[in-house]
Amino acid sequence: MIPPSTLDIAEACIQLQNDIEMFRKIRDTRYLNPRTSIPKDGSMHMAWEYAKDPAHHHLFTQMMRVSPYVFAVILEMIKDHPVFCNNSNVPQSPVDFQLSVTLFRMGRFGNAASLIDVAREAGCSTGSVEEFTDRCFTAIESLHDTFVRPLTADEKEVEKRWIDAHMGFEGLWRDGWVMYDGTIVVLYARPGLDGDAYYTRKSNYGLNLQVSSLIS
Image 1 (cartoon, one colour):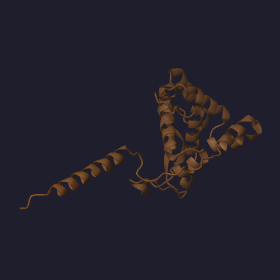
Image 2 (spheres, rainbow, N blue to C red):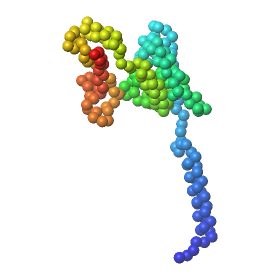
Image 3 (tube, rainbow, N blue to C red):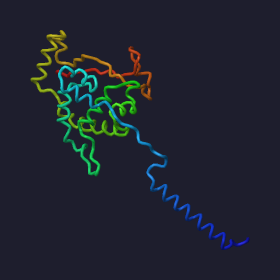
Image 4 (cartoon, helix red, strand yellow):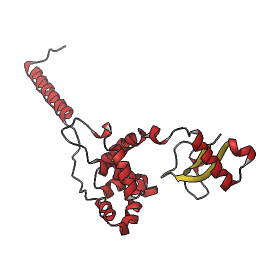
C-alpha cells in the first residue's frame, strides 16, 4: 500500500475544511431555498367600516357570522387570556384582528375555506391564520364552564313548562329526555376516515347537531 503524499493530505484537509464550512452555513441558514415577499393587502378592514353604520351591519355579519355586538362581547371575554401574551420582542397581532380572522375562517367552507384564500382575504400569512385560530379556540374553550352547566331545579321547571306548552309532551314524557332542533354543520371537505358516513342528503359532508335538554 502506497502511503498518501503530503499533497494528498493537504488536499484532503482543504476538502474537509470546505465541507465543515458548508455544513455550518446550512445549519445556520433558516431557509435553504430563496424566499420572496408576498404582497399582503386583505379586505378584513372593511368589517370595521361596516360595523360603524347599522345599515351595513348585515355585511359585517356576512363576513364574521356574528353581529358587531356579539363580536364585541366575545372579544371582551377573551382579550385578557394568557394565550394572547408572549415574551417575544415581536408582539402578537391585536386580539380583535385574530378573532376576526378566526371567525371569518369558521364561516367559510369548500374551496373558500383554504388557508391560502383566508390568508389573502385577511392580508396575513397562512401560518398566522392557523396560529390565530388556535389561540382563539384556546381562549373561547376556557369559557366552557361559564356557559355550560347543569340546570337548576327552577330552570328545569321552566323548560318543562315550555315543552308542555309547545311540544305536547305532558305526562309520561315530562320528566325525561327531550330532543329537539337538529341541524347540519357543514364540513369544508370529506373526512379522511369513513368519509362516506358524513355525506348528507344535501350533497355535502357534515355533522348532525342535535340539541338536547335533560329536564328531569
